[in-house]
Amino acid sequence: MMTPGMSVRCARRVRVLAAAGAGIALLAVLAWGWLGAPVLATAGTAGQGKSGGGDMTAGSDMAAGVAFLERGMFEEAVAAFSRVVAADPKGPEAARAFDYLGYLYWGRGWNEEALGAFRESLRCAGEAGDAAGVLRARVALGQVLLDMGKMQDACREFEQAIDVAGPGDLDIVYTLLGIAKSEGKDSAGAAEMFSRALAAFPGNPVAESHLKKLSFGMPIHFASVEKALPGSGESLRAGTGTGTGTGTSSGAGAGAAGGTGAGRSEEARLISGVVFVNEGATYATTPHVRLTLGVDQPVAVKGFFLAAGDEVFRWHDWRSPIIEWKLRGEGDGKKPIRVAYYVAGTPGAPGASGTTAAPGGAGGAVAGAGPAILVAPAEASIVLDREPPRGSVEINDGARSTNSTRVTLDLRANDRTSGIMNVSMSNDGVAWSRWTMYQFTKDWEIPSGDGEKKVYVRFQDRAGNTSTPVSDRIVLDTVPPEILWVDVAKLAATTADIVWATDEDSDSAVEYAAKKARDGESMVARDRDMTMLHHVRLKDLQPSTTYRFRVFSRDEAGNTATSRVLEFATKPAT
Image (cartoon, rainbow, N blue to C red):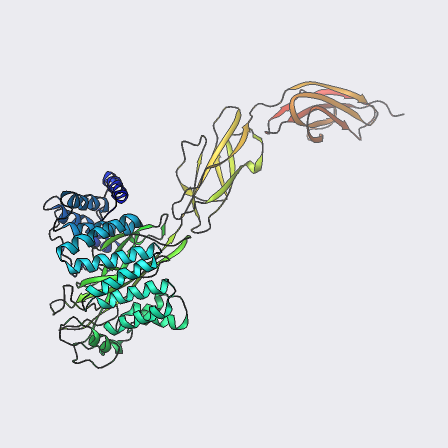
């Protein structure tokens, strides 16, 4: 039974999801059509009814919830399934409604809520005598417990699932129990379970890859699943089927591997599995992603093993071509999404649907009349980047002031995962410029009016993360210094000391020339020290000569003040 605390948490989640309201109708067919990839076969669900019509406003809440789910409208689906269980918690549809709720919660990583919903599904299915529902609930419970690190509890659920599993489901449950034991460091127990899974279905690529890696003590990689599949045209043509339709697949698997089955089928048919992450996006800023799943031909999918991100394979009964899933594991970076599909059987052949159908697919030939089916695994990836970039800005190479509203921003930023893409600027931290491509320097206009100005900058990486704004200050000063007085402090035959004062720190320069000199023959003496009291000595002057001069002072912002033209006469030579 769901505990009171669990009920409160579930109710809160439902209210949050129902309040969000903005469901996105993402039909799988449209997704594939837009991306130019194969059109998804809307695969049937083995052992679970489909919603039938697509009218989400008609029919029961259960039908509406399934329709919402299949269209990727998860908030609406949660609300519909919640209405089902609220109306009749022990009714005939409660087990399925709780199962769907648990799956939605599990996909988001809400393990406590998922655990409560799956336990309610198990209770309802048990009371109704629904063996398929009991199996589904125990498999789901075991996997949630596995995600929570409760290995022993997970193993107990899988062991009890074995007791109610039909021949077509044993390999899946054995595989899950093997994964649980492997994660619990019980290598011998894991090897035994994977061996049993292969005995039930020799074409099980997930069990085979795990068993091979256990032999070498190596981690499981998806490449090993692909290697477990018959990949050459020769092996495909060698496929055989039992033709019995009994729900066992041992003959089919042996045939696919090149063995001799009881009876040769028509040429095996290879079907490609497909998966898209966030509609084919390259980056994700959150571990919550949307997966679009399926195969490229119209066959019924029983379910699939999924490894998303850093997690190992988990089993999913087919519920919808679109699911939301949280990438497990820590750290950002490239996250592979790996899917091994199991088809329910060849369309029109015995064992094509129902809980006793051969698991088939995902690398094994499906038992039954008609050509064998081999499903190639699907793989995609997305780069998870949750960390915003970091950067800095410097105005005019760090100058303290400027006399122009046009400034140059020196930008430096870095991002460890996806790289810097865009930059945006602001003069007040509220109104921002449009995003433009990141460059090391950018011209920028600050507001007019003398005084301190502040420029804010934010950076955006390729995943869409935005940095915390950084800023720099500069003083806009358009007023030149005032020259208060100019005097010749000391005269000699060949030197003259020119002194003056300004009302702000500025440098010093004197332009001078003999009074009888031609235009363009003037000279300049400078002192670059910033001061309010200025002293420049003119040297190498001619004795007994009249000179004309004027002084200049330029402040830190670049504003220049110029005095009027004055004169002095040097003393005679001694």
